[in-house]
Every structure is written in C-alpha cells, then in structure tokens.
Image (cartoon, rainbow, N blue to C red):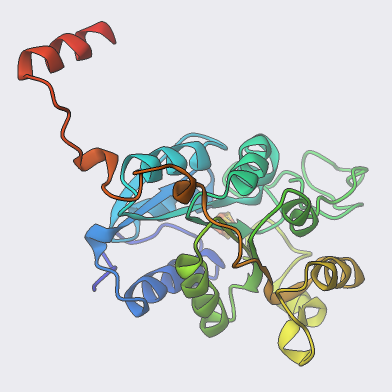
Length: 284
Ligand code: SF4
C-alpha cells in the first residue's frame, strides 16, 4: 500500500499541491487499495504533474481533458479506482464542458480540483476562480469578470457528491477523498490550494480567515439538497466539508446490463488473432 514513488515534485516550496498529493496517497491506502488498483489522470498546469508523483497507474493528459480520459479509463476497466485531478483553470475554464457533463453522467470517478484561483504554470494570469478586481498580468486594472462558483454549478448539474476542503487540513481532506472514493458515482472535491508564488491575495492566512467549516453547524444535513444550495450561497462558496451526497442515485456503470460483471479490458474478444489484426488495421 505504498503510493509514494521516488519522483521529487517540482512544485514551489509551500505550494498547496503537496498536501493534496499526500492526502490522495493516504486516502487510497486507508481504504485498502493497492497501487495497481488505482489510476490517477491529470490535466495540464502545475497541478497536472500529480499523476507522475503517485505510485499508481498515471496519465498526464492535455489541457482540460483529464475527465474524458478518466471516463474512458473507467469504462474500459471498471475495476480500477479512477482519480482525476487538475487545477481550476484546467477544470473550470477550458475543461468546464467536460466537468459539467461528467458530473451529470455520474461515472464512479473522484475528481479533485486543486483550486488556487490563478494560472500558476503560465506565471500568474486570472482564472475563472479569481475574484473580481483581482490584478494579474492579464488583468492589470483588475478582473472585471464575476467569479465562477464550482459548487453551485455542480449542484445545478445534478452532482451526487460535492465536497470542499483546504490543503492545510490534511486530515479533513484525506477523509473527504476516502469518502469520495467510496461514493458510488462522480465525486467532486474542490480543494483550496494556495499558489504561494503568484497569488498574493488568496494566501493561507486569507483562507484561514474566510473559510466556513461545516463541522461548526451540527444540524447541517449533507443529504438535504436545498440546505446544501442555501449554505453554498450564504457562505459565498467558502464552506469546507462534505456539502452534499445523494446515495440513492446509481452510478452510470450500474445502468449498463452486464457491464458490472467483468471489466471490458478483461473480456474475451471472441475473435482469432488474424481477425483482431484486421480490426486494428481498419483504424490505422
Ligand atoms: Fe504551486 Fe503556484 Fe508554484 Fe505552481 S507556481 S507550483 S501553483 S506555488
């Protein structure tokens, strides 16, 4: 159950992404998985490097396309635990179309967004998660666009599992990832992950001052959709914890007759080697 490999991450010292990597590794081990049971699929950005830093199957995809690849992996081999990961620019800008439809499709995938509210890899431009008035190289007068709320969008798209965490809360984040892996369906876990190099506004201290913890509301019920929507809007999306979970809706895979019996990747093709080669040749 060793999910660490010998690759040294080249994230900046203090980057929030380190904790997310550690939380994924701990959560996978805590739920009893082995490295060969797990596939980590990532997009492009500083966060996209994570698929190379975890000892498991990994695929570093292209920008905004972690989810199509992750869904393909899951459909081909449903025995794998598929974890998709990427930044807020990756998932909520170029990849937003995929994110919304993956949510409503509800394949059994855990999607972890490393939300630093800026583009880090390209050295600091405004992302869809940047606040109004946020000054960067691409918005020197301050951003004039409204800030995208991934939690509201996920709820509107019919999400069955919505959670949010902070990279400083390793214990809480690990627990949410464990719950996401065990959820039968698509789980979105948005994680505030400060970019210490380019985002001087949304810092660790800023998050500590602004985060609202759901654990402080003992009557909160994550099964109550209306309560979840209200709380997201009341807190302007700054709440952390398990925000919503619908355990009644079956995952996509469970609607396909016979699909759950055996992974596609392991099914007998029922053709000769010659027939297989002919089939492959048609796609060349
Ligand atoms: Fe992390 Fe920002 Fe450095 Fe990228 S640029 S590794 S997001 S601190």
